[in-house]
Amino acid sequence: MHAFLGTRGETLRTLLSIPLLLLGLALLGSAEAAPSTSHFVEDMTWTELHDRLAAGATTVLVPIGGVEQSGPHMALGKHNVRARVLASRIAQKLGNAVVAPVVAYVPEGSIEPPAGHMKFTGTISIPDATFEALLEATARSFCQHGFKDVFFLGDHGGYQQNEERAAAKLNKAWATRPACRAHALLDYYRVTQTDFVKALEAKGFGADEIGVHAGLADTALSLAIDPALVRPDALARAAKAGPREGVHGDPRRATAELGQLGIDRVIETSVAQIKAQLARAR
Image (cartoon, rainbow, N blue to C red; front, side, top):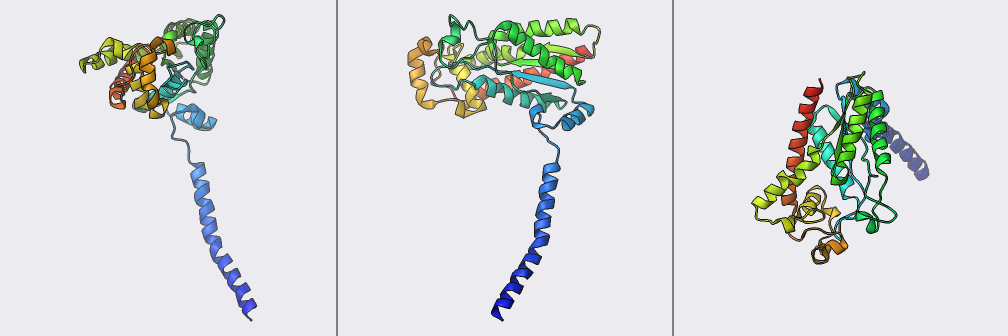
């Protein structure tokens, strides 16, 4: 008798659990069916991106980073992380833009014999012509799909001219199809070397401390984007070693708060310039 009741009880519990199971599956299915709200092309399905384009998101931001040494205190991929995050924030402000995957392979100087950053372990360099061809093919791909404006956002100073050459070549080829344009957004990088530096100087920091690579300014920008990019216990070593270990400046007093000054300027300037260039292109 007890065995019968036990079996019957198990059956009842199973029957009662079925509606909950079906509800859970329904909720899971609806969550999976929800379209992506991400700005990143690689997060979307092709149909989601097609719909986004049809709804007016006709601008593509191509973030360009790089893999290079930044002293003993910053990750090799800092430019990739910064470019991706900043492009997303710029796209959010624009409201009608999507973000392409980060271009992580860029010119960093001669490989053999090694020059510049290539003297330090982990830096990856590609030829200028290869890099420009990569940018051109990326822009052509988006243009083929119906996007109207492709913006190159370079986080590194060494390839700004390459961006300009690639955009000029594309626009010359597209002269007969003015609905598609390429833009080298040089102000995205330029503002980190001008307005941001002036803001740091106004707070009492000198040029030797601000630096031009892996110093206070560079380190502060990285801290503002992702503190995990910076190794706090290596800051003293970086300041002491200097150029011998790839540091031009003094990063010891860098903070996320200082870096935010630069981040705000990059976003504000980039959004304003993109809007201005879109207006001229139309």
